[in-house]
Image (tube, rainbow, N blue to C red; front, top):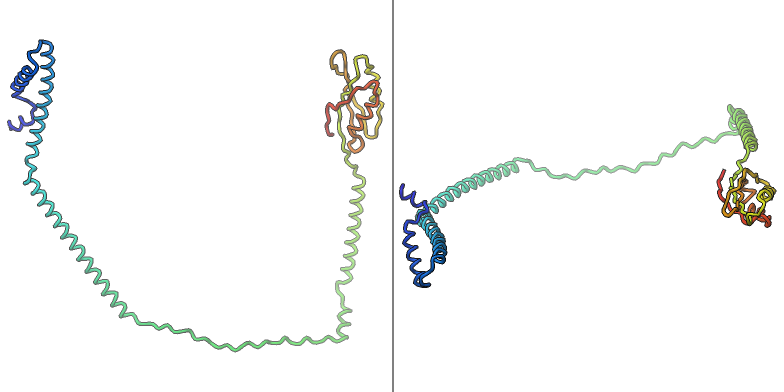
Length: 279
């Protein structure tokens, strides 16, 4: 127990001997050292000794722990492995043997079933010879005699009623068409109109704006109706006439309206369309 405990303890009992030997070696190599350098070298020597001691202890411990696993240990492991392989091989052989027996039983059963089942020969279906069908002629239609034709013509159960219904239907259709045409003729047609806002500009601030408005309103066209007006300042004492009118699109156009107003050259400088809206 004591030896095992000391094996795992990291103690170097002979360390002082190695320290003395190493110190003497360095003194012989480098000569006598001063106190400070001697202390530094001593510290470095101690550190190296500690590292070396640890390495030696680890090697010794590894050697002592690996000793049992030498050739004898490897041989025992090999023997155990071989024994387990033999057991496994034997179990596989028994499984293969069972499978072979089952396969032989299945083959024997299949062969017995094939021998016991009766053979059936495939026989071709017999074809029956069918004689061709004879075409049956329809019975000849008996020719109608002239006397029977006359009797059929005399019997007219619904002929007169159908003629009366056709006449009545035609009369009703014509009456409805006439009423629809009259109603459509009485309906007033929709007239497309537009609302136009005109800007009429004078030549200067001395232009008589009342006279200018009178000239504009003197334009009379079919489909033209004048509305409200007002004077809008432009700048430098000049004012323009802004006047509203309603025109029928089919009768009066904007080009015609501008042409008629610009004929008053003494008062009118230009005519612009400020707004145009469909009514």
